[in-house]
Image 1 (tube, rainbow, N blue to C red):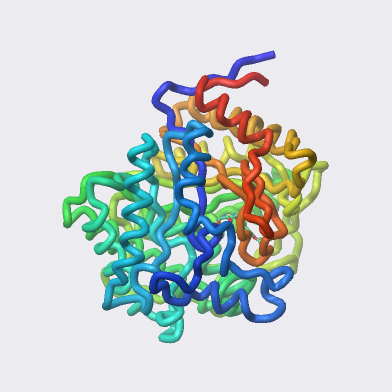
Image 2: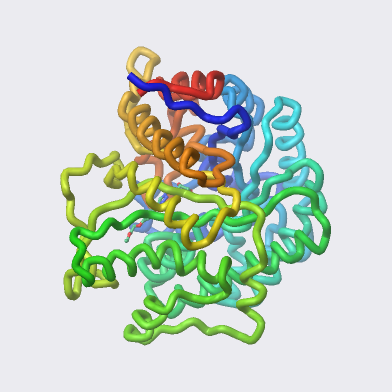
Length: 447
Ligand code: JJW
């Protein structure tokens, strides 16, 4: 038996996002978002689920904050719904939407919980999509207008900001694979969207600094780890392409002001290229204060001609899987953090998402989710290794506080520390909730 300890000032938290938990989709002046539209297209989301009522968190502020308080976290990562603030994307502000988040943030702070706010977690106002959405450079200006309003409104209350969550999912899942809103399948569109997201991020960071807002700002990309099956160069190159798709494609522009050449060349062979205008890369590479990292999975992979977009196949070397079918690869978490340090230096990092899907239901009021506890222990052990190896890690947030709307999987995938019964909206704390609350108290656990 061993004890894994964390520094006293290490921040522990949980994460959610507006569309996934709030519900109240047509209340208090909220406009429509691309997920309201996408989820209504038959066949796009499992069981035809949508976020109309979700976990009803919009109406259950007190109950949810009581859960956070009991869990003992000092950080809550949540997102603000753009269509509640600007129902048509820009222009007129919806005061009721702003009031809601003021109330919420005030209550968090009263309860000693630091807000960590995501500005864009995928719910683009539909009105902007009608003008081309993220394919249209005008959307960048709308995003900056929205961000600046939030900065002015919440200055001094919210001190930690993330511009964009998982730009890989927004661009490549949304516009190339087509699994998420708006569901296009066009590589060129995905590259344009990725570039515009990066510009929106950079312009917002620049404005945050120019306005002199107190606090820290960054973005929250998702990363994976692809371990080469062998040391043969073609296996190593194949893994590098896959890793670069998630990481370098977004990190290199932000930290170095360039796109990774291996993928620029690869995409060129597929007839797609980044459309860079003069000055773009300078804007994108604004220095950031914090880096959010979302890590769930990794795999062992090797070269295979014609396999997928990158001539790369994944080999199941006997991994366990979570119920969403992600392979469990905790060492990949440590490796990817070391890789980030090597490539990009010592920017302060928050783990903004890590967690597991296990779809257990309560039995006699209890959810015995030992597998989730095991996953969390395995990944937190890698966090401890990273901390002791000099990675500048400030905190760790579990996805998610509670079961919620898992995008194209609808309500079928449960990531929560708290179980939600979607017919009664009753919340039931899982065993992992009690395990994490103990960790929050002690700052250590046993393995
Ligand atoms: C990758 C599928 C091709 C969410 C992925 C699919 C096709 C190589 C959870 N993160 O609900 C990653 N989540 O809102 C944000 N994280 O590729 C938050 N990553 O691969 C959570 C899904 C994901 C994924 C899902």
